[in-house]
Length: 138
Image (cartoon, rainbow, N blue to C red; front, side, top):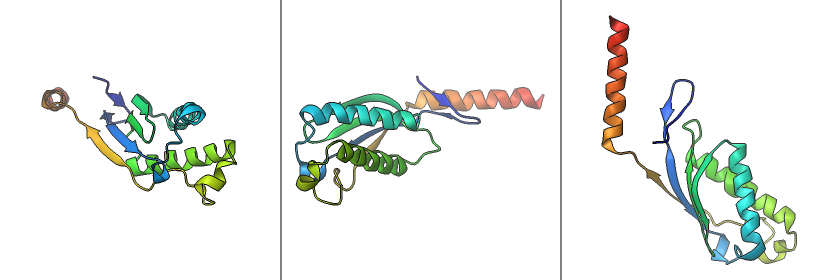
């Protein structure tokens, strides 16, 4: 169990996210693939988001990450896709002719799924909360 905590919150918000490059171009091979890994790691570290697992496939990206509850998944995806595209186009200005003038590297949208906890962990947390309430009431 890898629960995290904020001021008054215990959380484990783990998401499986998949997204693709625009027109599913297979540009994630070779140099771009290693660059994109470094860029995504850097951006996630900026927001203090933990990478659980990740894979850069030829025409899509798989990420399993833990996003703190203070961030929305849509906010993080907008940040990742937007900033990574800008950073990549800054490093490779010659791609602007191939990919278009709008500097969009990623296709619109993404797939997200939660990676849930089992019921026993939730029951234990609720019991712990009830125990702490009983101790404070006495």
